[in-house]
Image 1: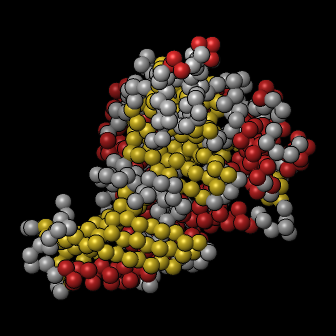
Image 2 (image 1 turned 90 degrees about the vertical axis):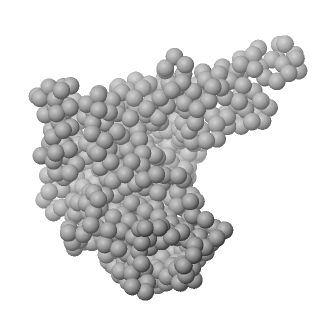
Image 3 (image 1 turned 60 degrees about the vertical axis):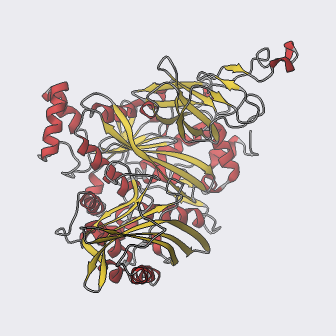
Length: 450
Length: 166
């Protein structure tokens, strides 16, 4: 165990309506999170469309451990720890690439795409009984890996919940995303954006299911967009952006009506939200008429309508994913330290859909995820202020009582906030957090809903 | 390809340089409305994500503004409710290494420059360095900016929010 915390310390930090600031501010808590949350749960690493051909790879981190996701010659995907079995250098230093084998830059050890050691220089230098092969050396695969509809999930724990059990009912958000593709598949496109904030990783997950913050955090972009002259020149990029900014200024009663659902293991989603006619695929926009024609050709009219009627906004897969199935956006969270967090942002192309729809998703990504976005920059500022504000001694508690006692069981393990501004999602995330953090072994962890 | 080794005939490089210095100075003095007035009605202000990114339509960007979004961006900078600029940044633009091409027949001049923006905010200094491409329309005795693209050298890096204009 990487810290001096005991189970009672952790359990005492999470109460029904509040958490102790140490959950965000204590380096000891962060160390334990790396062990008991990021070291045990399923983590999303990316999508298999990033590595279409044998030898294609991308690198990332699970918690703080560098890994390589690589396409095998048989078409499957493997995730290997990114270090040489000999003296430990990372074998891949690029974010992505294509190789026929992995070669260590230090002493030239060579590995196949499956991680198996294929050669070392001058093998006669080893006594036979101590050769790397005799010692069973090779690149190490991560303990568990599952790919669901292209989404590559891995776990640093050899045992624990299956991926489907872990995801529970929020697997429907992944289906919602992929089902929207006329060809039944999505692919990552348009690059990977990165931003970082000097604040705790959990702030982002909480904020993405927070229906109360937009009017306040985003007050400046709401006001600026509301005053914008719509006659000014736009090639679409500005139009999507200005509409989204205005949407954030929707009146309180609209936010109150939004569906806010939580699921076991800290997951949840916002739904029944957003009617932007440029983005919502049921509109009469000619682009969407053509898209629906292609969808109906594959799925039939009834199933198409069923797919496109789902109005889902952010889905959180605790602890490292936030995505928007309806608009093809994905954010993968990577904690660096207790007070620093990196966010990688991706856009999906719906295979078989008109390419212009992908371009709208790019424009939308720029406004919700771009490091220079007039929207995102205020979120990041507030995360950093939270991290600083936590250091005051006057009040060590963080309150999330809004809607407490009004959450409703909706069956299949889900609960719905009494209103769209309920803090049910934070309560649910911390119920899962406490469960993971107090579990002495991986078998004890998981499955808790608020 | 912009050519560093030779200035095109008939172009007053010093005049272009003074225009870019004026533009940068407006940003450093936070005279954003006046800065925006330098731009053409169908302008583009773009900070790409990737080193050799071809366009802003098919790849995400740090910023990809048409005139409409740029106006909103500038208006936001004047709002007291803009948390990301409370307190506001202080910046210092330094530009140099100009290379100018006369885009024959278009009436435009393309200017490539290197730009280093030093930003101070909340007791921290940040450097935002990149190569800038301006496309300038001749307008009377001066220019209007049809296009400004900033290729940050760390565009694909992990950025804290960039709420200011570069």
